[in-house]
Structures are given as C-alpha cells and as structure tokens.
Length: 435
Image (cartoon, rainbow, N blue to C red; front, side):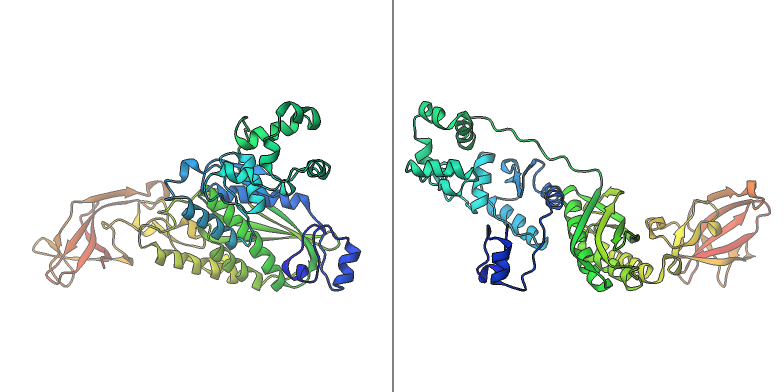
C-alpha cells in the first residue's frame, strides 16, 4: 500500500502494508492501482495554476512544486496572505497540501514534506530537522543512525573530508545545496499551449449522473490551468472511451469566455441531461485547444458586467439543453444599410458591444413616409433636425442601392426620431425611434 485515506488509516492500514494484509483488516477495502502518468499530468496542471502567484514555478517530482515568492510578497501584502490564498485555492481543487518555506529549493522541499514553516531562522530549523524524515535511501539513513546521528545539524557538523570518504561527494553536495553554500538551479516550468487531461477511471461508469462527477473534477483542473495563466475558454470537448473499444464525443460551448468552474459545470450538466451512454466508460479526456486572454474587464470586475454575464450563462445553458439552433438572438452584420445590418444569430460570440448613441434602439420593419409642412418633416408633430447628416450609400452592387442622409430629429413632445432624406428625390422617411 502506498497511501491510505483517513477511513482506511482508522482500520490500521498504513503505507508499506501488503495488499493481502490490508484486505485482511478491511474486506471491503477499495484499492486503486497507482497511475504515474496521471500523477505527472496533475502536477503539471497544478504548476499552471500556481503561476497566478509567481512566474517562477518548478516541478519537484513526484508530488511537489517549488514557488519562488520573494519577488511577489509585496504584491500579496505579506507571506501569511499569500500562503492563505495558495492553501484555500488548493482546497477548492480538492488537493491536500503540505507547505514549507526556506531560502533554498532543497530545504523548502524537505520542509514541505514535513509541513514545516520556520518560526524564525530557517537555517536553525534545518539543523534541527530529523534525519529519519529526509527522503534519502534507507541504507544511508541506517548508516547515519548507527553512527548516532539524529539531526541534520549533527551531520553537517562532521569533518567534510571524512564525510566525503565515507559517504561520497553526492551527500556533501546535498548538504551544501540545502544550506545555500552551493547553487541549486532548477528548470522553470513551461506551460502547455493548450489543455488536455486524460483520466483513467478505477471503475467503469454506466450512468450519466456519475459521469458528471468525474467531468466536474476535470473542469476543476481546467479552471486551475486557466486561472494560473489569466486565460479563458469558450469551447471544450470531452472524449469518452467505452468498454469494448468504442469512443464518443461531447462538445460543449459556454457562450462566452470563462474560467469559472461553476459556469462550466452548469452548462456541462445541461448537455448531459440529453446525453446517452452507448456503453460503460472506462476513461475520458477533456481538451481545450483554443485559449484566449481573459482580463479583469472581460470578467466584469470593473463594471456592471454581472447582468451580461448572467445573460450569457442563461444563453449557454439553454443552448446546451435545447440545441444551439433553438436559441437565437439579435446580432450585427457588416452592412451599412440599417435594414441589412442585423440578423438572428445562434452564437453569442457574434454579438458586438452596444451600439453608439447615434443609432436608435428601435428600427421600424418598414420606413414610414413623412409629410412636409412648412418645409419641415411632419410625424404627428413638426420635426426639427438635431444632428448633422450621416450619409449612407451602399448596395449598388447587389441591385438594392440606397443613397440617404440620416438625421436625429425631435418634436415638441420630447420624442426623438431617426429619419432620413432620400438623395434621389428628397423624400423624407421615419426609420427608427430612440428610447
């Protein structure tokens, strides 16, 4: 047994126990085979997530990360707050964590394995570290124990010449790197260009509801990947590997750029509501190929973007449940003619920012001809021009040419109109109303 959860530990199951002995203690014990490839992938995803705190992240396999934090302590207003953010974030990701702190990567790694945060001088804490807790070969630890050495400081205080002859120069190098007497450069983590996570299941899934729990786990990892790099995603694909060798895909669109686990899972759950498994699932892949920068303004931190975010989420959830073709909304088209400058679209990505105030929010289905009184347009009241002309000439290549001068106009009632004069004959028409 490599590791046991708290329930198993309460039954006497510990690391190093044989499988047969563990099953004798708990007949209903659930045992999963270790999957090093998945552990490596998860560690890489956590490294991506950690890059939101510092640009210098290094892998410390098989289960560790090294974060260089000296340069970012001021930004996070001190060590306690930074540690709190890291620990809280990993808890959201359902990752159990132990952390340590030192001025050298090797000492920090050793401290983290024991959950040590030095109260004062990290060197003093290092000197008091029990040798038996270091990740060294058992044979070496036994040799040190036989010599009566119990703490790191006792070993570091031995004459170097004799230590080198007895244990080799490799041990001397470890001591020097841990104490900062010898450089210990580490290879910085380089993030992947896209997100792809493969998950081999310990048991086969036959129900869509159970599949949702596994998908949420992968979406948590995707959110961590995106947070660390300040990115967002709009489309992802789940690929399912079925019993018997078959495969199926579940593409999901979120309707907007996002990195919110809650939003992504809400839409995924809607898609699952109409999804049927053709066979039990034994593995799945989550892939997000197209990633975009998602800054604070885009996620609504500095404005009243929450309402729009709620509408985007509603659109995406309805599209996931009913199909994209069933949910439509107004969108703009690149055409100068107002009657041709809009369409009904199913993809929210085609919807631009709000129109400038020079255009009305209400466009008539068909322009209304205006009467002329005393040389001015009339529509139940005398209309006065309030803006310079906006000339639109377009469509001649399609045989539907327009040549118009548009104006904002107002009357004694306070209403505002959008009217135009045809350049070919001077006739006036009402085309829109301002709110």
